[in-house]
Length: 321
Image 1 (cartoon, rainbow, N blue to C red):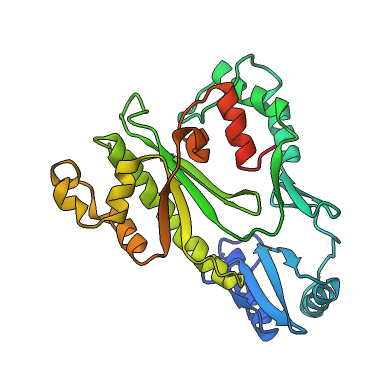
Image 2: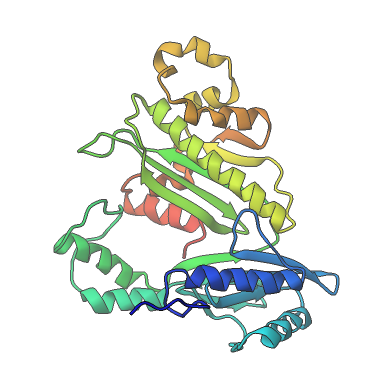
């Protein structure tokens, strides 16, 4: 027997989309609009003050400077939906949120998820993990990662201060993958003293030189910086020219000087055009690139295994403690 539904049922494939459409409609009636950078972020003005909502299916996090504004949004949602007020946020999307109001800091941890992982795999292993695993390994290699998590379960990212400047660091190794000889791109963006975005992944093509590997890494960092500029606009932040640091002078020259490709054409003319948009964004002053020494490169932790001292230094510099 086949039945035609007149409304969406819980558990159907289209149910999450139908719920989001309904929620977006009601928030629109309350003059909240969705962000162009992230459809799960809504913003609106309540009593001449900006209020933000972060939505994950039916879990909603509300942020504002004053509790009265938050209460008004809760009251509006309670009129339209069956809601459950959980009070001040302490857990959201697998992250514990802990605030130190005197120090004006916010720390994000994942102790619960780490505990669940340890319970699933057990406290075995005797090897330290300093690099992400790219393949599905079993046995002691996997337990090395679990062992590391067991010793760092309390670690998290701490945000604090009033510095609204967004800065990025991009790096790459060279032919680090033994099978494909592809390089690894790593970048991290910092704001308010902690990492707000990071990535570590193999590059789509084999780089023929360290300059090319760093150049491809910079192109990926530029994409993320442009997204942050869009998100910052939705949050009322003027990020201006986003500064990105790179430890390769050759890559910086390629990014800053469009004409230099004629000079180095034999070494760089094969680079795919999709990566050259980064130079255009630099010319528009949407992003800027500056040199930093390799020992000061905070994204180094995302491209290769490091010595313990350098590993701990990079962790601290991106706000992980």
